[in-house]
Amino acid sequence: MDKSAEALVQRVYVARAAMAEAATAHDLHAVSLILDEWEDALLLARRNGVEVPPFRTEPTEMERGEL
Image (cartoon, rainbow, N blue to C red; front, side, top):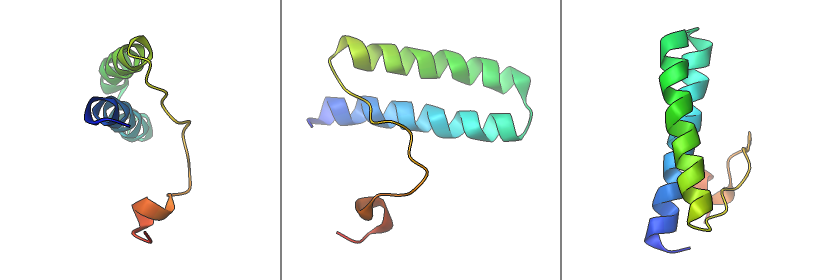
C-alpha cells in the first residue's frame, strides 16, 4: 500500500475512533460532525480504489509491536 492509500486508511481509522468516543460520551453534536468526516473519508478512499479493512476489535501483531 502506498503512502497516500495509507493516509486514507488512517483517516478512516481516526474517524472511527472519534465516533466511538463521541458515542460513548453521548455527544450528539460531535457524532454528527464526525459522521460527516467518516463518510467523506470512506468516499475518498473508495473513489481512489483504496480498500479499507473492516473494523477489528483485536489489535494486529504490528499494532501490538510483535513484528
